[in-house]
Image (cartoon, rainbow, N blue to C red; front, side, top):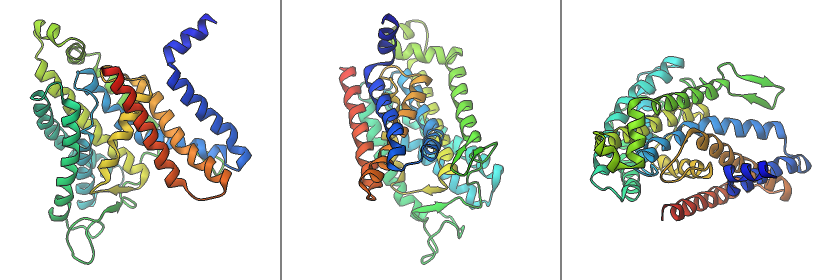
Length: 347
């Protein structure tokens, strides 16, 4: 009984309840005709696709900048890297690596400006970050129409200029990581080994960074900025570094997502990426003041698992096709719950 109480205290009732709901969905699935193997594969794939963007939440939280609602800024850097890679005709590993290589400098630049701004609005970071995210997406909705791209794969055919809303990466670097060392069991189950390994690498790099002198200083700034300042740590510099790192992870994360998804979503696409990442890390047990890799792993699995299983089971049970409606309801519900809980904790 004592061990059970320890487990409950450590895990928390919200994660236990969500985990039990997810488990019950997997148990019920066969009785309504939903394949367990296909559903499990979808959950694993979704975890790999979204994991790095959820990891992007950690640096800013640890440095006391709050949850990164400005994640679209990093995503835009990733989208620019992806489109430039296609514009140059890069394919395969070179295409994916080239997209990352071009996205990272842009993410560093955007993150630096974003960090400088947040240093001037201490105490209101999350509110300003939301405005930054929305305004950057709105600005880029104009820029996608005027930037000088020429690849026939990306531009509108009838006008000869401006990028399409959705661009396929098929023939360039689609599934480049998903198919690397992929483990296939039967026709309906596949583990995207390369994507999972890439996430593990990014998680290890994050862990290693926070065990360096700079990472320790960053955590000290988030825990007690007055003590950090008295110890000779530049609070503003550490905060800016955390924002840059978060923005870089956002850029890499969207590229990982795109190679698995198979498409680049421009214009309003980045709007729909920040809130699920925020909700996932909160559901995993993080707060606006503290987050770690365990929170990312648990939260992403629970969030994406519920998002995958609920529409499938409900559709099969009532014999209708309302997958997107159900997915939207479940996603928004989990986001609202996570944000409400985080807001209460921060008071």
